[in-house]
Image 1: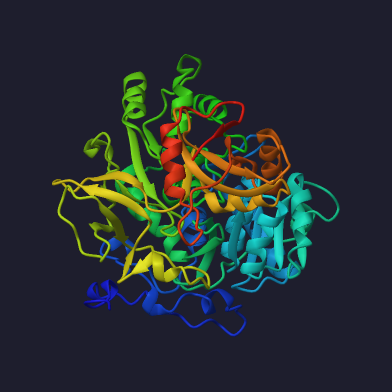
Image 2: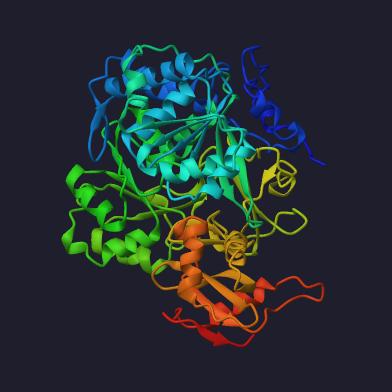
Length: 565
């Protein structure tokens, strides 16, 4: 039973009162929020977090700069086009008018977005929010079955999609009967651009509440079934006013760049953080380490967000790049090793700012500003957040003791109609599933994941999801998927496979099969064929034994090997 009064009441705020939707509003998202008593405690102690009851986040991220006469300032720098704040403002307004006038969007309707990181993707994202809709952004690499899941779970009737990735989008329609219309951009008589041309560049933002759902971010959990994390308009500003303001310390002169897709909430930093202060963003559709490093020099980026894997890759060819414009280098998405931290510092003179966040919390909640960084530690709670390390019963443990991380702040987990809410949120605290040690000075030191999520090259990959894909191959009898240590990627996906009797399927065939079933980055980079899998007396696979075996092995060989377990 939760003790004490809700944190919100302690601060004397009223912004968290659940607002009743207007009659014309689609109330699906609000109706499918978890029960209020199962929400985490929300804390708004910082003055900058005290938002008004009525709030549309786009007015603060975009419209305000036009009103203040700064529309001429550069906002987005893309590979094929760049947009000032006014140009983006007018594009967003035209798309919002299309959504409302041509496509019948009502506040609260969910809209699926599919694209790489482009200025057009940014414009559609903001237009949906400004019109009062709810964004559901998806990775461009997802396959039809993966796209269909959020379409069905969030009951989405409308999708906006880049025409270059339309094949999987069309295939997804076969699995999502509720999807009524897909509008593509990229040219053609029925394109989004054609519809926009007939619409006004003026649009008044929908009168949304600060606690109206505006984003459902889907993420894979340890069961393999994605969970939809619901976030409010105020949450989009809160991550700017906590982590970006107090740790990154952004300014209007900053130019952001990063590798994460906008469908990942980590990638939102590239857009939201500079727009909150009137800065600019370099938007890269192709953002491999080399693409990223070259663009930093070409566009004179000052703040970079990417995973340790990319920093390591850039280090290997550092002489080829000009990184002199960088003043902040943020690392997240996977464990930042001390070796990578030290090598980057020695080679560039820049300090890597480690941090941990999550889709459920929207962004980073543990990190330290540059002058407070302690190498090897993730950091301390971001201003506006609280954290602690607890035992299995939720009791806080002394410094130096390994335990479960618990965190709370102005953002928190609210799953879309999902019983796993009661596992992630306990007694008002969010439990992200990580084991940590806190030292005497309040720094948090990462130990391990508490579940079966595999973090590889900054991507969260569900082991059970990969298992499910493998099991769809007729020559696979059983399989277990775990993370295996790798010097380049930190961790790779490794599959232990029991072949069906009388078959001799190869690792390459299975890898190609998985790439066709689910997003290619999830495929097992190592495959070990075994006669049987370690199991409990009840028949459950003992994945901890597989992880132990993987840790004892050398880096996965190019060809599959037979092993005994």
